[in-house]
Amino acid sequence: MDVSFRHASPAELAYALRDARDYTLALFDCFQDAGLDVPARVPRLPIVNPPLWELGHVAWFAEWYILREAPSSHPGAARVASLLDGADHWFDSNTVAHAVRWALDLPATGVLKAYFREVHERVLDKLAHAPHLDAALYPFRLALAHEDMHGEAFAYTLQTLDLEMPQLPPSPSPSSQPSSLPPTTLKEEMHFEGGMLMRGSTPQDGFVFDNEKWAHACEVPAFSIDAALVSNAQYAEFVDDGGYGDARLWTPAGHEWLRQQEQGRAAPPGWQREGGQWQAWRFGRLAVLLPQEPVRHVSLHEAQAYCAWSRRRLPTEAEWEFAALSGHPSLRWGELWEWTGSPFEPYPGFAADAYREYSAPWFGTHQVLRGASFATPLRMRSAKFRNFYLPERSDMFVGFRTCAQ
Image 1: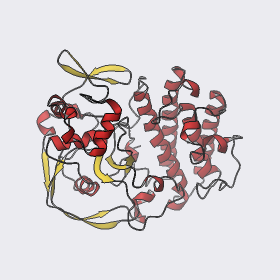
Image 2: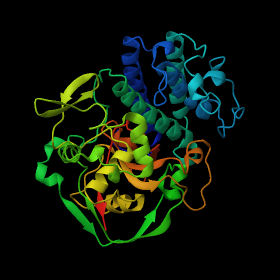
Image 3: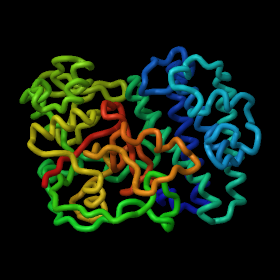
């Protein structure tokens, strides 16, 4: 479905929900085939969830807001009992700490798959009787967005655990093949004179995440920004010039992060040189890094170090949005999520929505990413969407572009 989920009709939402369900199950089968549907066999990493827990959580979330008609994420807010006894005890991410998800007495894989499918079928039946009104469709759109985000998380968990990706997502971005443009195009820079930007969304935008509320005027000074993401070739120049070994290029937080990770590191995680070519692990296979493709799996600190080396900086969140909404024909986004230079903060007048923990707990500690990745369904792509991660994370499908005044 190429239509934005934010405006999707009941029929379009039904198609998208089936698509998301099939994709979630296809990726889960990759974990099951590798024996990782058993939580005890899954590495205990702070950046992944046990896949069996995640499958149950996705179903529980849709059931909570749609079938159980919960007006908020407050425990006990559901008006109807779950189809699965004990579901609240296992799958409420607000009350089940990440570290204990490996030790839960979860039902068997077959039971949770059946629960997942049953929830989806009942969601579709309820959707068939829903009016085409934003208020009525809000919980369905919320559940779809939640599942799509977990689908992408499943994809980068496959990458983290060195498992093969069976196929591209059902709706990859048309611009997700960076090698289709000549290398000279990738170095193009765009200049904007700046001006007034209306950041955020309006009630007329259909579904709106709480951290996008509400639209407000923001003055953006003149700036220049790369038309494309920093490429493997450009990042390799930084690596070969000793950027990883030059402490002057790192912020105090970034240098401390590097020291803790691996003092003296000479390249991004997973990079290795073979016969004069850089290679990296991609979904369990060692692949040659194509020079013109965007560099990925770099942390905020690494992106900032590259910017310091190149005497540039990361774009602010407002600059990125200004450029993305400009309609400039040279601007390319949607290949990878992109680090910005802005911490994740609320817009003026912020108030949490029904999913109270979606944004509020992460203000001040996380950094804003913008755009989308090749693993983001087209229906989720929006120049208004604010993604956010901890600065040290690099397991996502993330890159960056540089900017200057």
